[in-house]
Length: 390
Image (cartoon, rainbow, N blue to C red; front, side):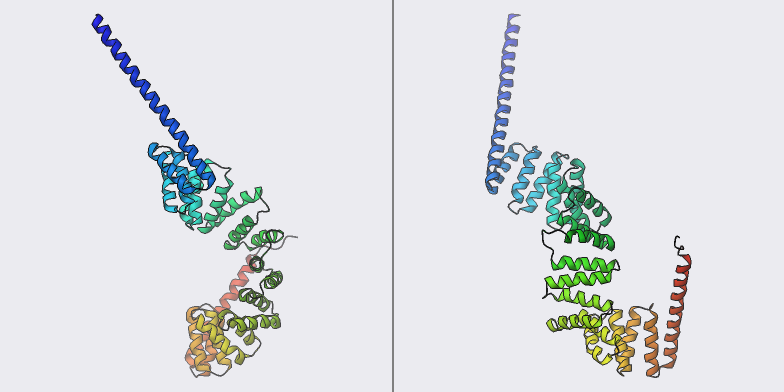
């Protein structure tokens, strides 16, 4: 019996020794981790990201299930432009702890900055689900959603952001971009007007031009021209802004002003096909086909697959007496778009000039059919339109 008691005492002593050793080991490991965290964070504060990376690498080798250490390692890597390694570290963090919102946010934000919008959406949604007050994640998600053309959802996120920061210039511009891509031009014009009213940062010519485009889309073309005048005043050397202003003058039948701006564009860029087409069409409208012809030839060479360019060139050729070439251009126009009555009508007239009477008759008949169908559709639309309320 005494022998058995002696054996039991020895066993208890041995077990106690193991437990004590394990306690010491755990305590030492925790102390080492604490010290490692402090060193890594000290390097981060000093901006020594390479040293911080080494510390975090050491920590994750000692504690591979520490999601926070993996997250911080990703930050240190990203600060050194090691994007792929950083993403791997953050993905390891969320694999260990799916509820670590910071790692989800870092993944999404980094992908947005790299232009990988489709990949960024899911981690940013997850980050917001875990931390709904993370406005940085919401902003990055809005940018990603615009990038993947999910505009209605992007607009909702932007609205939530603007409710907190109504004078945020970047958000107002992002909202305008989203509305414009949805063809919601009136709303785009509204937020751009709010952006332009901010004194800082100062409005650029590009912003005034964007505002002009929104106004024109909202059928406020007179105001659009005024906006483009501001854009040109801010960027007088920009042929893009001058063309936009000339085009709006052309739409408003302010031909002298349109001609002035378009000629200036072509003086600076003789091969500018858009300006050449608009100015050529202007001269054609005014009855000066001879002056329009070289401009429209320039436009048709640049845009051979556009109905408008081939059609306008065909008309100019017909009016300057080159009926054979007119037929070629007008046939090309009709092939590009068979639904425009005037295309068939002008082709029919040109065919008559070169003696192709049977084909001319068919084209003129097709023009009449299209014209009558359009009139019937317009009458039906007017008939179905509800009467105005008294």
